[in-house]
Length: 99
Image (cartoon, rainbow, N blue to C red; front, side):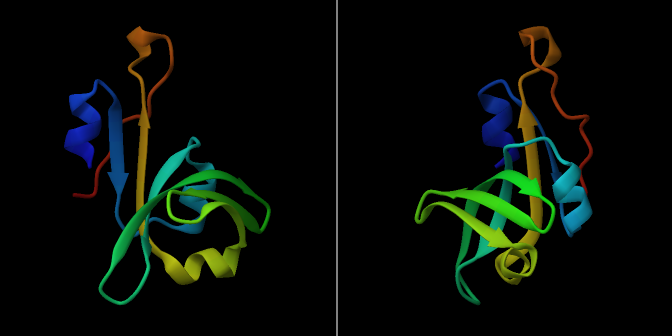
């Protein structure tokens, strides 16, 4: 995923085993990995975190709001933040990868 984001000119960083607090503090939208089943993974966008809730833009299910606990049940703790380089006029995340 990071290679694809870099290939289109975005700066991106990934975090494995991200915490709820790291997700809440991350710039939005942020890409997250989700578990559809024990063997099937999926990627969605976190659009916002507010208090004990999270709004997700999911290509399979549309925009949905979950409680923190409801979201944590399917989140695989993968977090990818991407943005345009500062030279393009929008600040990008500082690269830091656990990979």
